[in-house]
Amino acid sequence: MMTETLVLQAPAKINLSLDITGKRTDGYHTLRSVFQTVGIFDTLTITKTEPDMPLTLTCNVPDVPADARNLVWKAAAKLLGDQPCGAAIHLEKRIPSQAGMGGGSSDCAAALKGIRKLFGLPVNDAELKEIAVSLGADVPFFLTGGTVLCEGIGEIMTPLKPMPERLLVIAKGTEGVSTPEGYRRLDQLAVQPAPATDGVLEALYGDAQTLFAACGNAFDAVTDLAEVRQIRAIMRENGVKPVLSGSGAAVFGGCGNPEQAEQLRDALRSAGLPFAEICKTV
Ligand code: ATP
Image 1: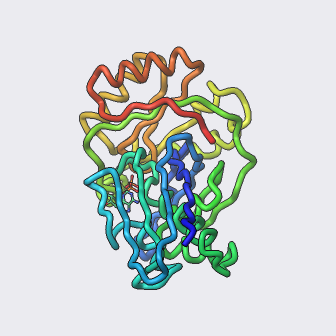
Image 2 (image 1 turned 45 degrees about the vertical axis):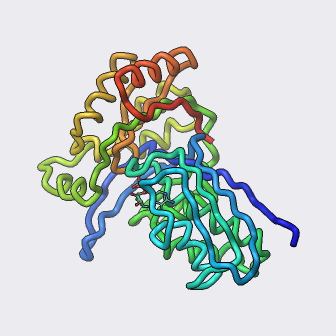
């Protein structure tokens, strides 16, 4: 049998803005957020095997479950059946977990697109989007990526004209955050953080400095992990405004030029932070 393999790049995302606009009666918070894919990628390699061979999934990171708990496996199960067969998938992780960078969701979207293509499945884009919604709130965003305004509980997506390429540094410590705990803390705040989305929308296509000054995230007000504070301090020392991505614990900062970005990344690494990377918006 001829081996057929697909290699897919699954990008991370940041939230240029993230406002919490309310809470529904069912307990879900509503938000307004500009999502943007960035050039840090996981790689998925999907290989067709004998049709009756059970699915195998391997991953370079031991902490990430390489079984039915993995969103890549869940994607395969949706398209190939509950006992998925006929594929071997390797996942090479570079996007940190519990970061607010959407790594698992992006892998999931890449798996949906890749498996559909490799097996020539008769699933149209609308059907693939339905499946994506059932697998996680951020998965539909990653089917297309780019610059997207997300509202509602994240399900109302308005694609925007892609923003110009911008330079960023993203860093994360070893600790992750609990998203439910973040929401609980936000609910307890007497005064809600100032919204950032309108400012970001206005500044998206202008100069980089104005855009990055407008970025903001409600979770910034309730996240005080030691490593997050350390990252914020180093970014500020380097003239960069730190902003949390998603509910954290990754922090990004927009840079004016490559020299500033390199200096900042090196300072973060020298401070012992396990993840500090330069990337561009994609
Ligand atoms: P988000 O940005 O959507 O909040 P996150 O920052 O919490 O995501 P993820 O990498 O998406 O980080 O994964 C969080 C958890 O999901 C992990 O701790 C892991 O147990 C589980 N998980 C399931 N599938 C994956 C995957 N493909 N990659 C990483 N984690 C996965």
